[in-house]
Length: 284
Image (cartoon, rainbow, N blue to C red; front, side):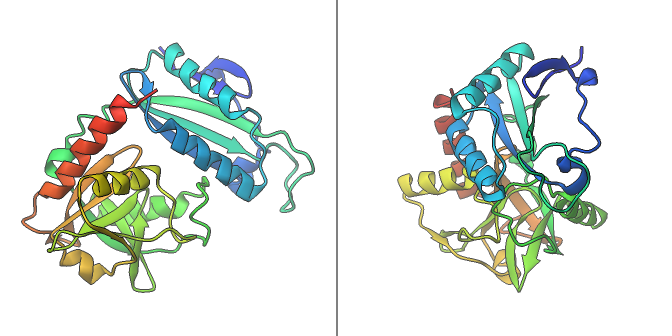
């Protein structure tokens, strides 16, 4: 059975959902997206994703065709129509359809799509084993704080990491780690302090990142928001990534070097446990 997707106010089987070849999301990557986790049929951290969505559309001057309240109902309806118990909802808004021109069209009608992916987000086996990462130069555009669909270079970086036998890439710019290919990068120093890069145009303002820092504060885990170098990462006691798709996921090797004892660290596992417990209880 095919999935039911949402396209511009219609509910359609995925094979019947069509977008124009003149859509600016296709021609220029002139679009933004969000990913919301679903556990037990409920939405995780929806308010944070909704707020970031509104920020991204404002930054690009794209008008969302639905109000935040209407968009919440669409998320709930797509869960219901697909009987989604656990997985992800992908939302994308492009500026809309217009003849090809670098200049924005006047008063375009945005294209809004949503689709689901069934996926075991809670029992991710990598949470027990950890992942490996490779360091790759960060060659993305400068406004990474806007969650656009310009994902070709992150895909290239991930493929480069795979060619080196790693699961993911950590991107490096001007001598500092920015983030992973599609997640926030974190380390824990040997004295137990969590280090994560400060918010700026250089990184996406991660929803999971913000929640993990709040949880760390509540749990009495010291943290510092600053950029860290690859050498600091290689010398760390623990490392991990955060994202809506991975929650808190341990990193056990960087460029082939074991981090700590080469196993998921205790503070990382504690943060994952606390995150899952808190966010599943507060799902809507």
